[in-house]
Length: 326
Image (cartoon, rainbow, N blue to C red; front, side, top):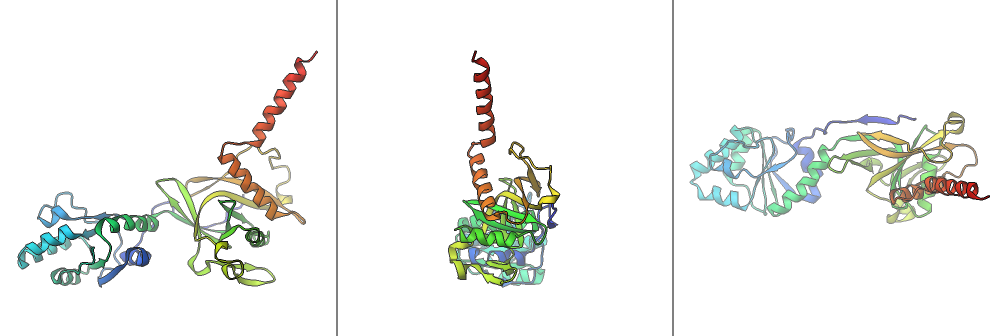
C-alpha cells in the first residue's frame, strides 16, 4: 500500500477568531468592529447566548464559546442604566469571554466597543437573524475544527461517487482524471487532495487546496483550467469520499490481487475506513475504463448487489443440481 499522507490531524484542528471570520465571510456576513483579539484561539467551537450572565448569574457561564448578543440580550442591556450596562459587559470580559457578536443588523453599544478594546477582545456584527446565524455558524465552526488530512492524490466524482486515486508519481493519475472528465465526470482535486472528517457522520469529504482549485497539470501539456475547457459542470467544490483506488506497478502486485473480488480492502484515513481497490498499472491498460467500472461496481455494492457472491451462489447451486442427477 502506498502511504501518500502528507499531514494528518487526528485531533480537532485549532483555529482563531480571525480564521472564523475569514471562513464565514460570505455565509455569515460579519463585520469587524473591534479587531484586537482576532488572534485568540476559539477554545470551544460553539456559540452561546449569555442571557443569565448578563443578569449577574455566572454559574456555568460558557465563556470559552463565541458570545451571541441577539435582540433579547440587547434590549435587556439597553434597559439598564449606563453604569449597570457597562458593569455587566465588563463582567463578561473579566470572566474571560473574548468575542461578542451582535446579530440582526444591530450596531454594538459604545460601551461594548470600548470595553472590548480595553480587554483586547473582539466585537463583530452581522445582518443575520440570531437563529439564522446560529445555524450557519455551526456549519462554519464544524468545518474549521474537523480533523483534516492532505494527501498526494487526485479525486474525481465518478458516477456520483467521490473516487480518490493515489499511487506513486508517474502512474497516470492526472491523465486518468482528465479522461474521466472528458467522459462527463467532474474533477474535485488534482495532485493534492484535502480531506476533512465529518465526526457526526464518520465520513470524509474531499476538496482541492484553494490555490489549485479547478486546475490540472498534464505532462507534456502543462497547466489547464478545467472549467474553461470543459465547462463549469466539470468541477466540484467538495465531494464525499466513497472509494480509494490505489495504482501500483503490475510487477509490484503479482500474486497479491484477489482476482474474484471477494476480499473487501479498505484504506483507513483519519479513523474512517474507506473501500479500496488496487489497480495494477502496465502499458496498454485502459485506466479510465477501469476506474469507471470500479466506481460502478462500488455503487452496486453500496446498493446491496455483490457480483462475486451472486456468482458463487449460482455455481454452488449448479453443483448441487448436478450431484442430484442420476
